[in-house]
Image (cartoon, rainbow, N blue to C red; front, side, top):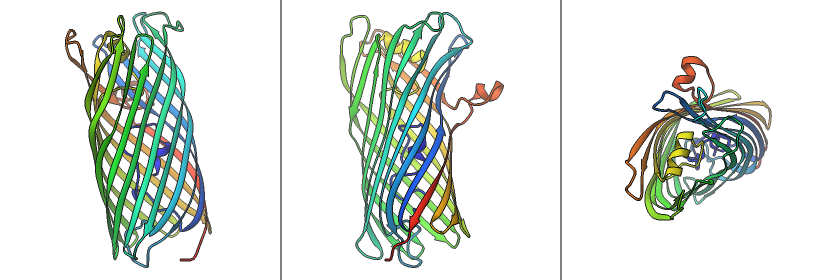
Length: 387
């Protein structure tokens, strides 16, 4: 439960249990702020660059308590812990096709993120703890869309909603300098995309599990983790001109694989983690492209297959007893294949090759796609407690 609450990526895997720097021992409160961006980019057949991005600014507050394990036991996660975090942010949404032409589709709007995370960890022995986590990330926005007209001409209003809820229940066992955990996972990805020319809503349940392990070698900490959830989501779609409803089930999969390394020296802690995140989802409701607006209003059904590599770096320094400053950085880049099919069988199937990249840079770097970034900073105040 770290950088994921301050990131723009809604459907990326969350840091649910034991996958970040451990909290300070004792009771603690924290406050963090971040700037983030996420974008999708497609080159149209006529050479235009179709880009859509979401840029949130977050404020996060949290509080909790933790107790470290016995001397030398485990890999760094607390023996006992409870923690609550809430991350709220406003966002700006923008989609454009460049260079500009009258046939282009453009959109702009505002939205909000409402994220929270809860973790509970209870020891049954010096070596064993049961743990539970609940993580929710939600984004909703209202966009004004201009389809095939001059700029600043309203064609329709669009309401987007994207949400991922993760619940985990697991067991963690500790040895000297090492720990391993396994957990069952429930994931609920929901989405809706409602406009004058098309309407899509998707909801359902995914089930799976996760494994993770941590080893502590002096000042170094090594970690690895994997999770996967799959299931069937219910899909309802309508489009102009007749708005005939189509209801069907579609397979969805969310999975992630992580490697991390931490280093502690004096009053400083560092943790770097790489995550390969892969998903298959039967909807698009986040950073929607102009090409997708046209496809959905023509009657196409989407299936998104994305592959994203994320790098998370957290650095923490204790300036005074009980007061720590924290810097958080996330960098990600990836690709997405969007399959488009017609439920009625009239339109031919096609695919869009989409880059998952940020909005920064110019010239060649912007054409290739700059990384998506999250930059955050925060402070932790803690009060030690006895065992």
